[in-house]
Length: 603
Image (cartoon, rainbow, N blue to C red):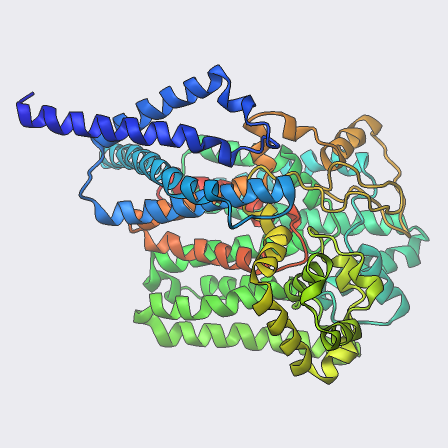
């Protein structure tokens, strides 16, 4: 080592020392210590954290290409957003508010961003090296193809294996998890009174199967169970297609086997597959749409030459939009992105997109007209403004002039405002006066703007509190805490709606397994296990996905970036929703093997 190299190494070591020390000092700002910082600061644990940071940062700076500006920028943006989410999230979770005047926050933000940027870049270099070695090895090894006949049998066995693994759980929670608006959707069919509050395709499917089976057997439980079996078959079919897709793309057998067992046994997958809510079918369609987008991006010419691939793209997109309204909003924003990326086949893609949206509007409008479904509700898309007004009224009522209070009470009565829950908009929004609002929208929009200009930070905190579970990894899902439903009262956890709403009732055939799922759904059990708990965290998995998204962007794998954009757009729609629940981002779990394959393999 010459003198110049020694000086450079010494400078980098000094920088590493400063960053590691500053990062360790700021680290308590991203830990939810309930103000008892001695748990970290007056502990040998802090020394270990400092030593690990020093080693990691020093080694990273010595080996990373410091001139790679593009890589540093992408990693820096990811690290900045992650650091912000942690700093904001810990405050929201601890005290329900981000104090933007807190100097510790603004000092910790650049320090921790710098630390995480270096660590992200080092990890990306490690992944890049693995990928390059794998690609060089693949050039000398020809992977054998799988005969079509064998593939057919593998798909059938895969499909049946998942159904057989889910069947004992269905018997344990028999007739299934009939929850999350299930009763309301069934009643629409039973009473022949329809609204557009829930997607009519799902209302008719759910209510139709239950009513038809009840008419024949006089059993609502059997009707609910039959719906669950149909949904199990649809979801199993989607997973089977994904695994077949991975096999065609030469994803390793180990990854595919792990994915199969994950689909068959991981509780989040099983719970929502056996849940009557529309989320499972919506997410299955979204998962298939991601595969269609991957196909389109990998080989455009082959995609547009294949009639079956184009039909698959159309059907998956239409189904996804029919089962959730936010799917329509997300895909609408996706359109210009697709058109911009696929310039070579602009006309062909435009035709497909026109067919998709035309099909959706014809089906949706046709069902609305045929079944005389009533609409006119505004509170779903006004969830965030409703929460912002309610929060400001509760904590800063002095900013409301007498005429403002009068206008507010016209759309949100006093008895609604006193029910403000920072994590859940339902108690307030359900009492929103739609007809009054519709009669003079500009008046109430003006009220929202006036109050927001007076208390902008209150508005920001209202939105953050309503959504932070989607981006803060350490969140415990407890949004329904204290709410009483048919058979229990939510306590520490509202992770999953373990319930059978009327007209069904729980009739477990395997009580011990039923009890295990009850604990997963309603008790803080998995959250007590380090690392494993992150598999259940919407915020934790979100940042894993964001990390992979940034990495494939860094590696310029733009055909993979496009499907990730669709997931990101769906996520953006739900952070503007009524609360944070795992069911709204079920794609995080249904798509996890695909995201892993995108990172570990060349798909």
